Image (cartoon, rainbow, N blue to C red; front, side, top):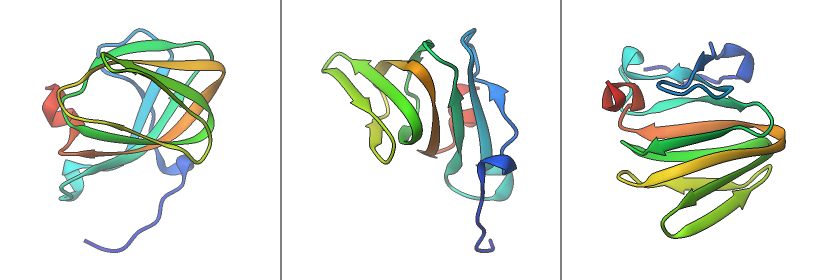
Length: 116
């Protein structure tokens, strides 16, 4: 695999699987590339909320806006430059705030395979 760089314009956004909210994910590296991880971007419209059973270890880096992630242990809120780790096996609610949010994410292993 070659060393590559990506920009948000490289992502092909799709609605998050099983969700009706205006929340979209766009992988730029995944199992189709032979990588052991998935890397991509997320886009959250303002005031959206999704419930997710985390099937893989998931790391989100907030690039724009703010997100809150709630689990049994409480709620964390992150803004630009901050990172949220969601361990495999957690049930979470991810909520965007009034300005929406843009994230970059890394999952291990591939979230598409785990969600299938």
